[in-house]
Image 1 (cartoon, helix red, strand yellow):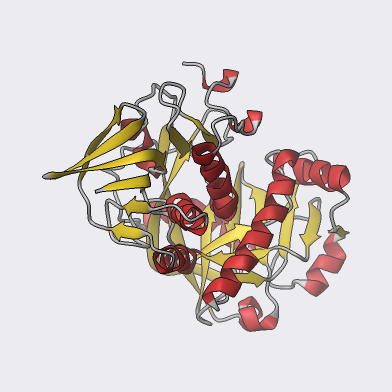
Image 2 (tube, rainbow, N blue to C red; image 1 turned 120 degrees about the horizontal axis):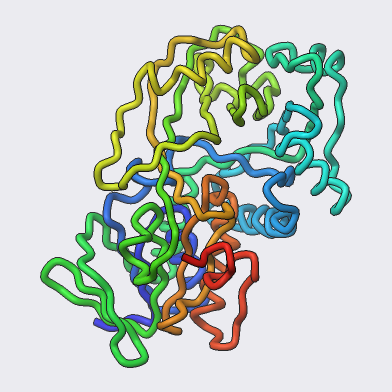
Amino acid sequence: MSYDAIVIGLGGMGSATLHELARRGMRVMGLEKFQIAHDQGSSHGETRIIRRSYFEHPSYVPLVDRALMLWNRLEGESKSTLFHQTGLFLAGPAEGEVIAGTCRARDLFGLAIESISTADAAVRFPNLRAATDSTILFEADAGFLKVEDCVRRFIDSAVRRGAEVRSSQKIIRWEADGDGIRVLLDGESLNAARLALCCGPWSSNMLHLNLPLEVLRKPVFWFKTANPLFGLDRGCPIYGFESMGGFFYGFPSLDGHTVKIAEHTGREPVHPETVDRLADGADAARCTRFLAAHLPTVGPEFTRSSVCMYTMTRDQHFIVDRHPQFPQVALAAGFSGHGFKFAPVIAEMLANILTDDHFKGLELFSVDRPALNV
């Protein structure tokens, strides 16, 4: 069986790419190592933040705007609610990466991001305790995406358009086959004119490139709280604090009993095949200290945990480009812990690469950029 395109990896980026290629009328096959919407990679854990407060680099702001349009389109197609607007509360030192970077993006694009005094914040958000010398910003339009639901809706919509999907697949390798490609599975091979690689933490083994990608283990926790002000129905925002030499973030309570808390910063390099997927009290120690300082009515007991993986590039910007050796192959990797919100935009880029021989992507995401030189 031959296809117009095969997509390897059906997490956030791969499921969106499968959907986008099917929307364009291509005969497409999606292959997934695990089950759809699994918890073994980087696209799980209930929620992902979507924000214009882009402290990482202001170039992402227009991509957020496009992503919001595309998420809205998927909601319409799937007749489901995927985006929940809650607002985003950010606190930290004025000169810190988060606040300074957010202000830079705000000023460049004229974003509706409000500055709040610590006194006003204490009244408006009494469950969130910022240091007295903090700078506090609030983005009312920010919110979160239901991550597993997003993946499932992309897959469902792609299948309705004729895409084929295989989960629990052992993918041996892929190779060029003239102007096309061949994917070798366990006991079978598939042929296609084009290939999209969206392999997440397994990218280093699948790209056929020597790229400096590092996989980090990221524990996430759901801590107990009896404070009703954390309720989604009480207008609790997403919140992020640059504190204790790191950046910590959390969500409103979705169940009325717990809040999801994690540290975005910190480094624990791992291999995706041997990563410890059980998080314990030692893993939670920095989060519990963060809670004591900034969310005193939460924790320190957590009821459940999850382990995610970040695939990091040296400059923490994405790789979305044509394969430098095989022009019929598009690749997406290195989303460095802030990529999921862009899944439908990345899918458009990959689809453009596969359907337009002259398409040139963003230099920021180039596979040949100096920061990736080994």
